[in-house]
Amino acid sequence: MKTLAIRLEDEQHARLSILAKLSDQSVTDVIRQAIDERLTHLAADPEVSAKAEALTAQIEKDAAEQRAAIADLFDTTAAASSRSRKS
Image (cartoon, rainbow, N blue to C red; front, top):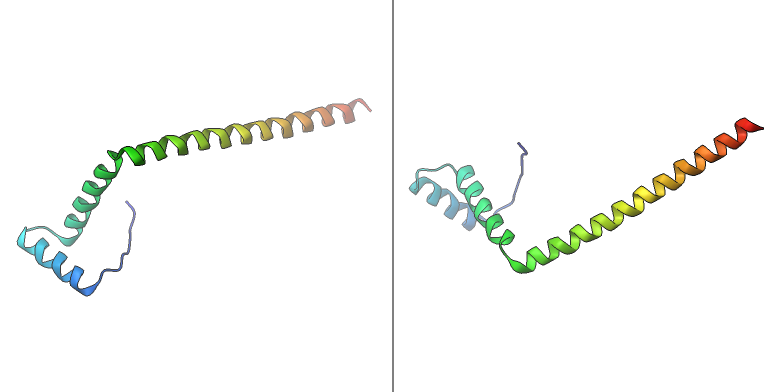
């Protein structure tokens, strides 16, 4: 579990505290529920989904480039090491 500190305006904190008390919930539980609802809403947004697909494609591209760089580095190192042992 992670800890997160947030800053709220006095009015917002007062509303949050009162509504939590009136609904017999802790402030933390009300915040967690609100975050879960917002995350569900965002995940269902087609625009966010499209951005997620584009980000996934970019991550895959970056990972492929990094894999290729590592392969080149270690293939080059192995070839150089092999040449130096033959000398």
